[in-house]
Image 1 (spheres, rainbow, N blue to C red):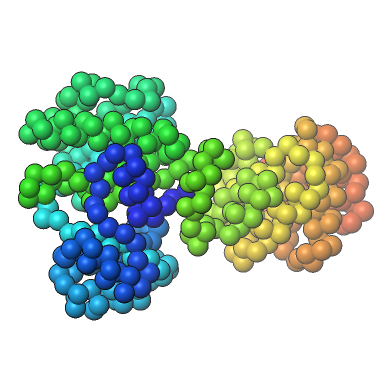
Image 2 (cartoon, rainbow, N blue to C red):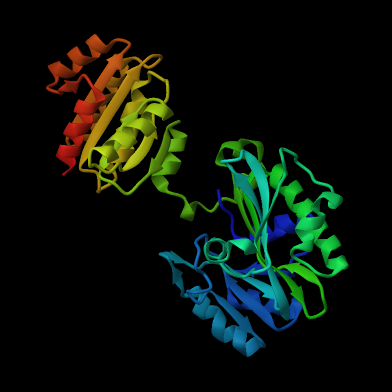
Length: 376
């Protein structure tokens, strides 16, 4: 889950990180009141949960009331990667002398959290990693959820020459780590962390992503969710207790078990197809799950054929078959469907489907070959 910059800034502030003074506005008069309170010049920052905001003209520096009245409507009328700008973050402008990138994320290959920094801040860190990998500094937490200042010595020295800046940066890193684990984050990022003309360090931006699977522990964070940026099908799937991720292919996939679902998608790709989704109905034998899964998949106009691949253990194949029939009856769809069922109550399931003129396949390969052919 992602949140807007103004929301992340408030979490940074509460965690003890030095952030810019400012507030969010939805109209020009509100923006003027904020600007007058913090003092001109100010920066107007469009709040959208997509990248490329700066390149799209979503950040404006204004020196006075006239400039604000002129630029605020320009931002409000912007559309950035298909999303309109509804809120604008008004913050104090600062005279930046140096920019640093600082972020904390998870290195899944090493199963560890890692602080990542670069003296080349204010740019896309991914591009820096490609063009100048030596500029990227890393500090692995080695399974710890807090770090001592002394342990960060060489890390902060690689970013700051001044001793006072090193000490302040160490404290910022410690606070970032605390926030990261407090809220089950997958990313906590400052880009850029800046030194201004007075030598003060400030987080000039704030970005936080959260682990969806841990949100049940954080009701306060759930309230920050902006549903406009959430995929409607994925939200509905979550309510229906389905694990669903939309992709860009044309083969709809309904599978039980995450491992089998991944394997099914791999085989679809291997045999020349392109999966339209990941969907795991889990171990439940509730026919309603199959109905809900088909309803969600059929909304995707790119889907040309549907593959149902079930390995019945806890899941009963006859319940899956009844769910298929109920969906066909209520949804009245014409999209071709390929069914492979094996395991618990397989025989009964195949009989149920055969009586309703639905063929089944014995092997996954046969089923995938057929569905890829139909999708073309």
